[in-house]
Length: 311
Image (tube, rainbow, N blue to C red; front, side, top):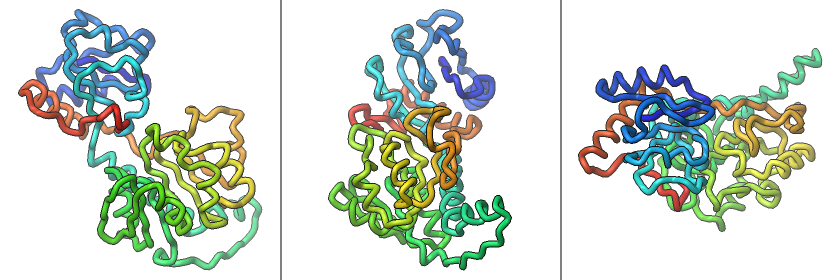
């Protein structure tokens, strides 16, 4: 197996992979060039995060590509993908980590914590009467694996949760709707909106100025999905006008967020550096080993990506 990532610890991943599959020979690719030690023809599997263009061509006997994360937009957007199974990580720890982060963001806005933070900086004792969770309408845009887990966690805490998905996705305790035609009505009922959609050709800039305007005046906005799902300039304008009163943003159209971005200086915005959920080597290694076993046995892999759909 070849491992490539400029963002993850290769030593930790190698140890976890070999603990799950002791016979696996894991070779670490050079971050700058993508080159690996030894004969490239030995490589059967690739565990990667944003490898350089042309990376896969050097491995003629590749059987499986594993995306080092749940989001595959950067991988499927390439024009050099080999025609072989591509999988994404689907780790319960990733879902739990995302759900806890979303819960933190929603609670922070629902309990007016940014208001109190501003009052503290100004030395003001400022009381805002709390609302119950049942009085707060939370809309979750995207009900995939991560979105569904986060949605059910919000339900467990008593929020009035509504969910939107591209196709029907019933969830217990959640008012769900689907399809583009249902978006305006869904957005109009979200006091707090949580964006959890994958990035595809259909979802790029889905949240543009027109759709942001459907949110109730003073709504709170959370994006833990992918930056380009939202028209960032339109979001900045909505935050400046007060139509969206506050935002918590973990993802951006350009990452790292450029120093000149107005989002850095906005008092009503919390910026976090794309960390809502990450792959955990110790727990993710088992599913990687299982997919390797499946490939070698001629079986269908788990969590296979359809590049034509983008996820």
